[in-house]
Image (cartoon, rainbow, N blue to C red; front, side, top):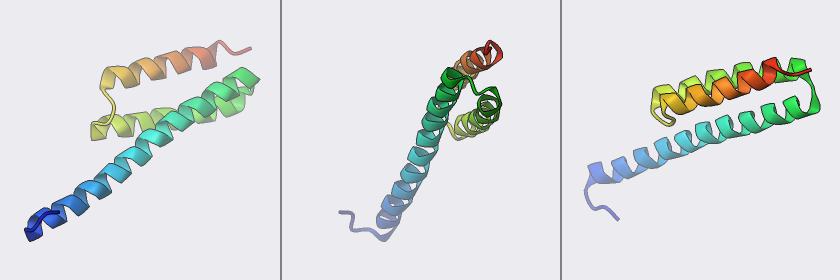
Length: 87
């Protein structure tokens, strides 16, 4: 445990940021999984709305540095192709 007051505060701040970052990454992963399920079930309307959410949260994760830009672009590209090719 830290003894210096600023170090104690830094530990709290880091813990809070870590929780927020984990929450955002988990939300992105869960949205991608939900979108994949919607695509598999053939629900085109739900897949489109979920895809918009995936894009929004992936862009937010990229801006915070949680996900690399190329990774985000690749995931969005693959999902968009799957949504477009739905029957």
